[in-house]
Image 1: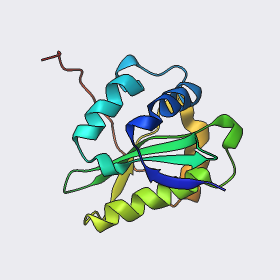
Image 2: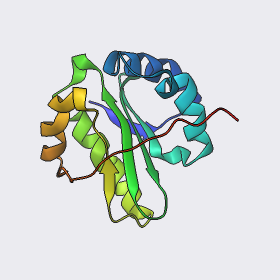
Image 3: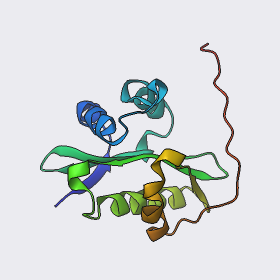
Length: 140
């Protein structure tokens, strides 16, 4: 049995290990040591973890800008996949975003991780024709 709760500092090591397991080739700016402190400054109640017997086995980061919601950094330990944890995380993030007034949620999937598209389709997400663009800003 697992539970979904809001992240606290006591979960850092577990989330860090989880993200390294789930995103082994990720960029440095997405690392827990960079992402988590920033998330805690902005909508900390939308950073959730899944605990099973006190161990972090999943996480999700969501956000709402007043116009659209976003889901990112959804991760489940490889050893715990296909047990409903990912779907439960999505549902809880959707519930929290809806409570804020959100009517549409976006997420992005890196092309090299396209095997997860089936999971997102199962959760009700559809591919939209968009071009995703980004720009790295210099550190202030």
